[in-house]
Length: 636
Image (spheres, one colour):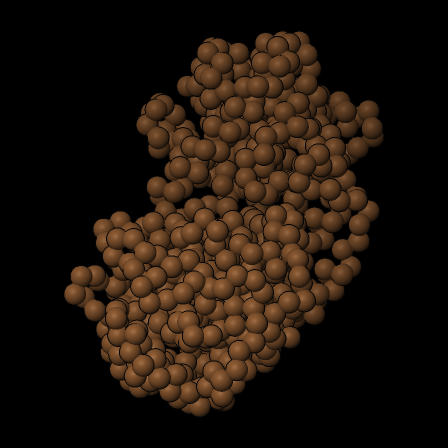
C-alpha cells in the first residue's frame, strides 16, 4: 500500500443455483487467488452463495440453512487470508430475510450490510422475499455462524494501518437509487465503495451502468468497485453478463464483461484523500465510526494504466475533441479581452516556433469570433543573432497565409547599441546576451501595440512558466497570455490539430514544418544556418516535465510517488537516472522561479492545472525546496 495504492478486485465465480456448497468452494478458491495476486479488497456478486435467481426457493428453510453452512465453510477455508472480502448471502435477522453483503477477513465477519433499496419493477420482484435494510444505526446480532456481527446499512470498515482507507458497501439497486447509501458512507469518510450486484444485461444497459459507476466515483471522490453476477444464474428470462467495473474519481481503471475470474486494479486512496481535502466537496462526519481491520503494509504492484502524457488524451477522437475545446476557450477569453479594452489590434511576436504559432492561431480564431478582419492582427518577426532562415521564413509565410499584417523589425543593431550602453562584450554569450534580445523584442511589441492601439498577446506556455524558462520582463510579459495554462506537450497537438482540421488547408505545409522544427529560443548564434540552442537539451524533455507538473501541482504528490509513477509510465523511454536528474531539476527550478509567476499577466484557464497567482497557485517566492530535494536525493 506504499504511496496510497490499494489493490482492489472484482470477482465473478462460477456458481450453481441453490448449490451453496459448490458456490462456497468457488468463493474461497477465488479469495485464495486474490490473496496470491496481492489483492487487499475483493468484491463478489450479490447473493453469490445461493445465486440471485433462486426465486421462491428463498422461502425454503433448507436453502437458507445451507447458505449459512456455506458461509461457515468460506470462513474456515479463509481464516488465514488477509484479503477483505464482501460476499453475498441471504441472512435471517429478527425473523426477516435480508439480501446482505457479508464482509469477512481471516475467518471473522467484520459486518453484515443489508440491501437498502429493493427493486420491484419489470423483471425484479425482490420485495417478494426480502425486507429492506432497517432504518437507524447498525446494531449487533448474535448467532451468525457463531459470531456476534454488526448489522445494518451504511457502516464503514476502517484500516488501522492506513487511516485514509475506509470501506463501504452497497448492493446493486442501491447505486441506481437517488438516495444511494454510498452518499452517506462517503460523508462518513469511505474512500472505497464496493457494490455487490446481480444486474442483468439488455441492450444499452452496460453503457448506462458504466456511466453510473463512473459518475458515482466522481461525485463522491472515491474508488468504486462493482461486481455483477454472471455464469450460473438462470437464463429462463434473463441473461447476466458478469459486468465488472473499477473506477476512481470518474476514471474507469478496469472493466470486464461476459467473463468470470478476477478483475484487478489499484485504487489510490492517497490521491482521493488529497482531492477531498483540496475541494472540501465531501464533508466527513462521524469520523470515528466503523469496524476496524488490519492489513500488512507493503508495496503494491502497479497494474493500472498511467498515461505518459497526462495532459494529452490518447485516442484521436478524444484528442481532437480536447483540442477543439481548448481552442474555443482560449479564443473566447481573448475575444472578451479585445472587446472590453476596445483594442484596435492584437500584436503577436511571431518567431516561427510552436508557442508563437499557437498564439497567433488562437488570435485568428478570436478575430473570427469578433467578425473582424485578420489584418487587425499585427504579426511581428524580429530577427537577431540566433534567428535561422527556416524559422524566419516560416513566421513570414504563416502571417501572410493567415492574412495578418506583417512587420519585420530586425533588432540586431538595437541590441548591439544596448550592449554598448551597458558595457557588455557581444562575444560574451552569457545570460545578459540572451535576455537583452528577449527584452528588446518585448519592448518592440509593447511600443507597436501602443502605436496601433492594440494589445500584446503573450506566447509563453504553462511548461515554461513552471520551469521559469522565460526572460523576466521579456517574453515573460504581455497584455494577455493565451497559452498560459497550456502545457508544451499539448501545444504540439493543438498546432497539429489546426494543421489537419481542413478548414484552412493553405496553412498545412507551414504548420507541419513548424511542428518539425526543434524547440529553441534562438538566442545564441546559429551554426551553419542551423539552430544551435535546443531547449530540451538545456532544461530537459518536456514530456517528463509535464508529467512531473501534472502530478506535483494537480495532485500534490510527494517526490517519491511522482518518481514511481514516472518510472511506471515512462521507464521504457527514460532511464531511472535520467528521470531522477530532471525531477530534481524541476523541483529546483519550480521553487526558485516562483517570483516570475507572481506577476504574470492575465490569461484564460483552459485545463485543471494553472499557475495563475490570482487563481490556482499561491506560493511565496522565497519558499524553500529543501524538503522536496532531500527526498529526491534519497531516491538514489
